[in-house]
Every structure is written in structure tokens, then in C-alpha cells.
Image 1 (cartoon, one colour):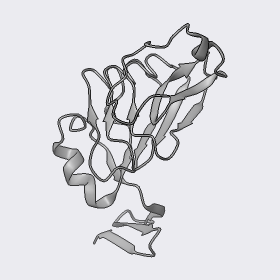
Image 2 (cartoon, one colour):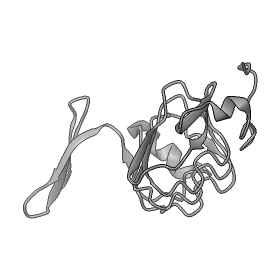
Image 3 (cartoon, rainbow, N blue to C red):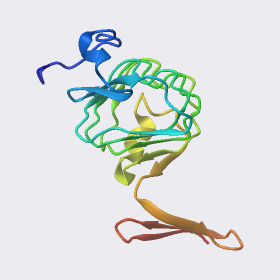
Image 4 (cartoon, rainbow, N blue to C red):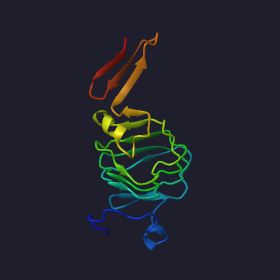
Length: 170
């Protein structure tokens, strides 16, 4: 058992231990941390980080080329060095954290910075200026349940999960 006072676990700290070898293939958790992906992910894998997870360890999903999307809960506060580096086939990231998670070095190396990053609407300004997230150019509010464009393209509309209708354009 690892106490809650532990704030960081290095990448591969438990690889090839008796504990690790008994873990099933897939996402491996160590307490409140997503430790790594064990085995080979299949193509078009979506990762839904479990609620209550506070950190994603360094190198946790590095070079997992089969991962196409990842969803992180509001509890995420830290994402380690190189955690998503080389995940070249990511097509979207969703992060429900109101405060942008702090990321280590090269966390998103080789990830397309134009993919949609879904975050809470009120937090978009914070993500835009946060050192770890500011290079992403497509920040999108995560509460959109439907959207569309008028036939003539003059306006777009968004419908949110709270029942708000947003119309943009003329």
C-alpha cells in the first residue's frame, strides 16, 4: 500500500515486480495514479481514466500508437514527463479538470496540437495560457451535446448539456 502522502512515482518503478506481473493487460493503476498501459493496445483504443485518479505517471502511455482518445476526470492534477509522447494517433483529449493539470517535460511530444481538447467552458481561458496546454490550438467546451451550421453558413449553433443554446454569426 502506498500512502496518500506520496506525490510522484517514477516511470517503470514497478516494472517486472511480482505485483506488476499479476496485473491484467490494459491500464494499470497504482493507488490514485495511472501507472502505465500494460501489453499492446489495440487500434482505436479509447482510454477513460477512472474517477479519483490524481496523476498520470511519467511515460505511462508513451508511444501507445493505438490510442485515439483519452478522457481524464476532474480529479487529475498532474501529468508526468513524456506521458503521452509519441501517441501520434490521438484524435482528441478530454480533460474535466477546472484547473489545467500541470504537465512534465515533453508530455505531449509528437501529439498533433490541432486535435480538439475538450475542457470545461469556464476554464478555456486558463488552458489557453497555461504553459502545459497553450500550444493546443483547438480548445473546445466539453458540455456541447449538439451543434450545427445554417445552410448558408451565416451562423453556427451549439446546444449545451445545461440546456443553453448558443448562436454565433449573423
